[in-house]
Length: 260
Image (tube, rainbow, N blue to C red; front, side, top):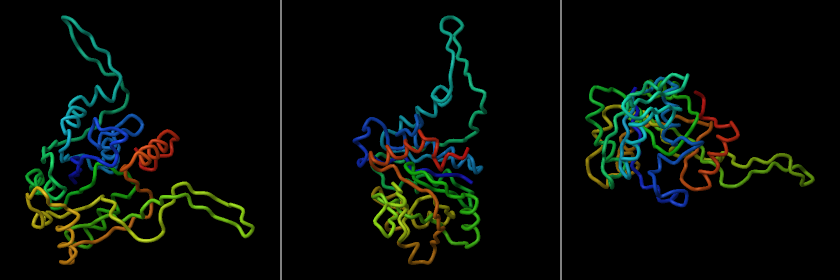
């Protein structure tokens, strides 16, 4: 199943980390968060990607045009017999990647609409954001989507808690401390959508069309949206605090999304 990834935002809330690269290129452990997301989908067998580019999209193009050079050791011979030899015993990622220029200022609904031509003949496709990681079971998500026959399935997640959660005994002694608990109440949009082709009937090419507003509200009104509840790990990278948190997971070897 093809995977559409929204990669065009400005990332204004995380400019204190970097303003030199687009948000999906902000690294976790030396590799862009976008790469982590794509590796996760590929683990489940979804290896055909459509990237909706916008702000500084040329940097994302550059990364994939020079993918082996960025991800492998190499030996360069220069002069009359110039050559490049890559050193890596691991298999290369067998992905197909369409890098689509969807407009520097376009909102999410317009970006999705503008890649319709790359999804012709696809009864269903997947859609997500280029700035969040999770350990959602993608096989179960797709099965759920196909079972109900509605146009859109969204993965509902628990919002990460902002403060440390403490378990306290009768005497006031702290029994347990959880630095970043998942909130116990309510569900929020975690991305990781599965869509039917009919989704495009709810979209337009209007530059200011926000997918999460008019189109989704119309889908809800028409009874065409279902939620797949995911109680496991999910986390966005919206702030410098979250950048530090996600890199901490990687550095400790505890990244729940790294199952490949």
